[in-house]
Amino acid sequence: MKAPHFDDSYYKSLAVPHGQRIPAGHVFFRWVLYVLSKVLAHVETPGMECMPREGPLILAFNHIHYLDPYILAGILPRYNVPISKIENFEIPVIGWTMIKYGVIPVRRGEVDRKAIRTALEVLRAGNVFVIAPEGTRSKDHRLQRPKGGIGYIAAKSGAPIQPVGVIGTPEFPGAYKRLRRPHVVYRFGPVFRLRELPGRLSPEVLEQIGDEVMIEIARLLPEEMRGVYANALHREMRWLVNQKDCGRNLSDDADLL
Image 1 (tube, helix red, strand yellow):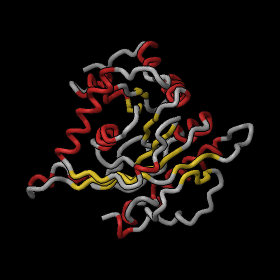
Image 2 (cartoon, helix red, strand yellow):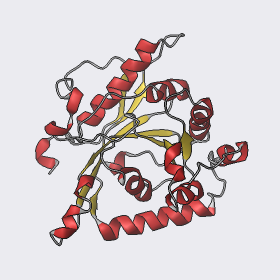
Image 3 (spheres, rainbow, N blue to C red):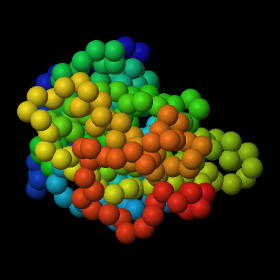
Image 4 (cartoon, rainbow, N blue to C red):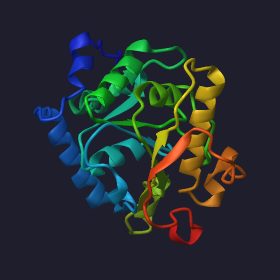
């Protein structure tokens, strides 16, 4: 199946201003995803109470299974707009569902200015933008270095950032063979804002922002999943400032199992 053509009206429809009716397709498929996630898995969402209930927000999660963004989109209590590689829109049924839900298509391997501009407009409208900073699934479930998009979008939008640690989705579908539902955890960390940035955003600064976001995701994961950030948890944060604490130690490994 060939990737669909996205005209400007599609991109513009994704940024829903506060108070405006959310598209029916998004409402319906978010409900479908919510029901499926509850039926097919045991889903826990510690820290979700820290999620701001209004205003722009960047949700950054680690990507370890193809179901990660679908479950996350379904359990969020707010209108949210994920971003996904354009190849996923070529998948029969799934691609159509993504369009109806309202997902930003991005062309990897290039600077997709339209995707970046749309993400900024989504945040400017006060919506939740959902992104996997690594840009692709981690085959060994360990954190990888992020792509440049997260740092740029965070810096240009000034939106708060909330890390989400995903654990357990690789249990699909093996858990069913053991006659049990997969146990999936989406751990929501504290909400961060960026310190005042220099006038000119150098690649080094954007890279540092991306790394700091990944370090905060690493704090929410078991040690064996922290990957390249396993030894970085004590690094001093230069750009991220804790705006809203969750009131508990979400990095405690004992709580992650």
